[in-house]
Image (cartoon, rainbow, N blue to C red; front, side):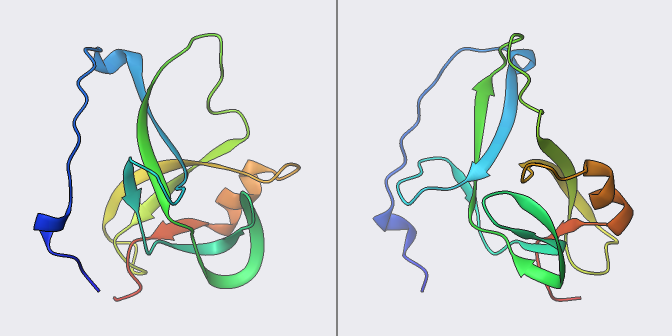
Length: 126
């Protein structure tokens, strides 16, 4: 059920940072997450079990994912243990929307995900 827009409060915090200083970080949304949250995404060729892992399932649900801009720290490698996956509009894969850098379960080879063609779908409608 959708809530009327009048029931939502919008909080805006302004931090003056250059876009070059920021990176879009993605992770599983908590119940009290105050970030942008992506819901209803599907994984094709993988499953989410506290991180991405290869799966025999053709489609599986991705938990709600929170997007958050964070300041880049050159001392920390934010892409370590993550894989960059495309997000497509639907299963035809004709329309690429964007990419997400998602955490993998340990001892997973990122090239195995690419060989299998793992991707994220925004909709199962074709």
